[in-house]
Image: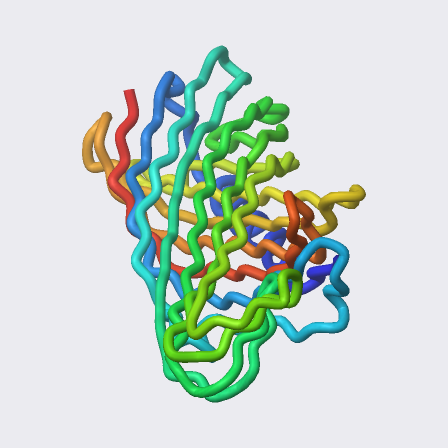
Length: 284
């Protein structure tokens, strides 16, 4: 999997952050032991997914675009919480959590293959795509100079994905049991740990303004999981007081899973989340 444009954007943003920090004068105040960010994000989301019974051919089917096919909202407001504990001068522990759950329904008049079901005829299909992104990681501040700190590390995001279809008033044929019903539903649920390499730049750009840029990435290829994940963000933070502040920024998460197997099902999906953020900041 190659995402050249995403990687270029990530390093461009981090380069801008570092350049701004290097132009600042003075030194950091005594580093904060704890930092907590409560973040609101207005996201734009693109979702493509496919689910087949284990042993099926993922390459033979056509992935469904959930926004276009089932009228799932393209835009969604989301909340996240992130925190950093500076355990020692150069050693930091990061934690975070975000969840995005979306549903949509639309009258459909075509055949859809999903899991072990073949859905046909004219009727309504309700779709859901639920995700959660807990994260924990460690970073080491390998460079500290003036108002600039650069750190490297790694962590794990334990992704939980639930994607399902529920048909009403349509003919549903089960390809495994051979049973035909009017209406039916099938949901695929996948949870798996994703280790991530992390790079972060933090710097002061004026007396009360700080900037943070980060990039996290991984690619995995095993018998049960093949794909990758890229996360990047750039924020500008204003602290009118020593312990409280606010921030604005941009974040993007791209998850491209070409194959994942669990239980009786295999799936592939591409999940692209990007948007502006606004944060309430606390440090002490």
